[in-house]
Length: 267
Image 1 (cartoon, helix red, strand yellow):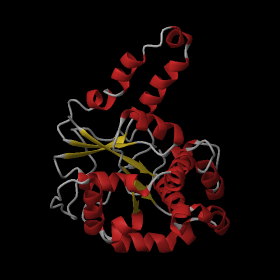
Image 2 (cartoon, rainbow, N blue to C red):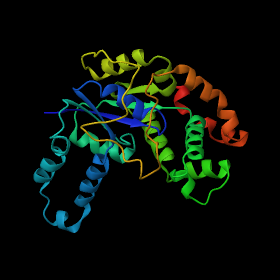
Image 3 (tube, rainbow, N blue to C red):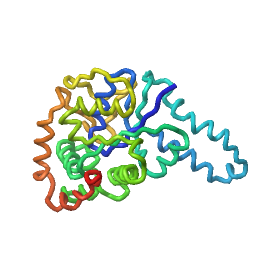
């Protein structure tokens, strides 16, 4: 039986890098964005249909939902699966609690202006970027588009805030992107301690691009190199240099507009 854990991360916050590191351990599989949260949500919506209300076979229904993870990951070789999805979103977390008893969620965060700057820098380098496929032309317009209330960044932020504000600290472990870059060894050891998994001797240079269970991202979908990481080493100097350049990438008005969304820093 697979041991399930969960990851809720902001985009451009080190999800791919963390996966590249943890997946060095053949006993662990940190997934790409998983459809499992949406699958579970769709299943529970069936309980509101007339067909189910007319014949409420809850036990058979629960047999399906409670076995979903084990069936989905049945052919994966790893013992420990870390499923990445917006699990902190209230409805996803509510559903998860119905089918999993001991929940442990890794939260990956990064300053919101840094996330926006990362998207903008990538879009300037890659014409195929989804950021360039909208009507937004200026950097300010593109940032506002990325921060649309129905977009991924806001959805992830809402879920993470719900986790921090409404859930006991025992079920989540916060990882900041700068900590992953500045001290990856200590950060990874902290994750192992939180999950209760035996430590593993990871390498922090000559990294592999993200791959899990023999599969890789298809960056033809959202834009080339969206999930490409620097493989030589995890270099804190590169991160610090980027952080200093955020003011050159983003207008001051955007930084001031979205800097107050780093709510985890006041906890």
